[in-house]
Image (tube, rainbow, N blue to C red; front, side, top):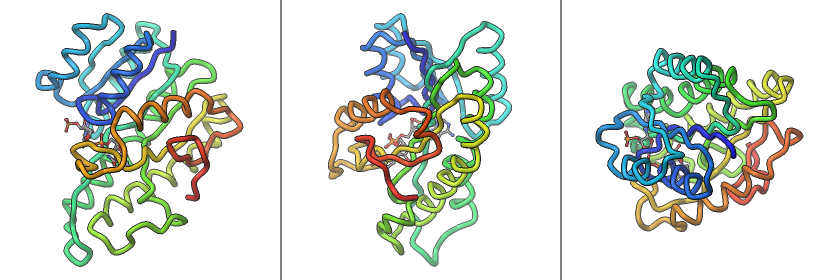
Length: 230
Ligand code: NDP
């Protein structure tokens, strides 16, 4: 059975990833910033002994290092790391704030890069490090330029570039690294008018993660595994 670490597993896509992998019998290390108030996740862990909850605020680099070193000490190796935690701050162009933009970049771009660097040391051979990006971060797709999701889009573009920059190093170590667009999903972030349920998005993502090969490392994919432009 695979061992899978997920960030931001308290709700939305992260919680559904934890649920589906738990049901499939995989060992799930579900991380979230406030385990005490993550009721749905606690419920999942109570009913599935293959689910362990660990506290991890992804903007806390010391906490990232400390969890990676805990896993190393106890000999846990990850087959799959999923950088899922993310934030969206709606700010219209012309009204961006330094606080909003910085916090968005920190959570959506800096944190996943630091998480990958730290956990690369506890990845199993051939392990996969996936980051949940967004079509909004693609220059090629050119979605909603000028809209209120501009700082979010910039943060996902930064994440995509971080993946391109880290890919050669990790690929040389035999690790797969990739960005995925989960689609427009009904969550607190995506809103209830979104096209896909979390179940649909995550089922499709899981199949695509499974079939991802080392040759495809360093690329950006849609949820069904088809390639996307950066
Ligand atoms: P939600 O807003 O529903 O959930 C976001 C999750 O990220 C929560 O679990 C939240 O934890 C967690 N999180 C935020 N900041 C931190 C942090 N500093 N440390 C740890 N966890 C944190 O969003 P989604 O489930 O929709 O989004 C998941 C990912 O998918 C994100 O990266 C998002 O950008 C991406 N995405 C989503 C789309 C959609 O349509 N929904 C479309 C494209 C991409 P807490 O409960 O503590 O706040």
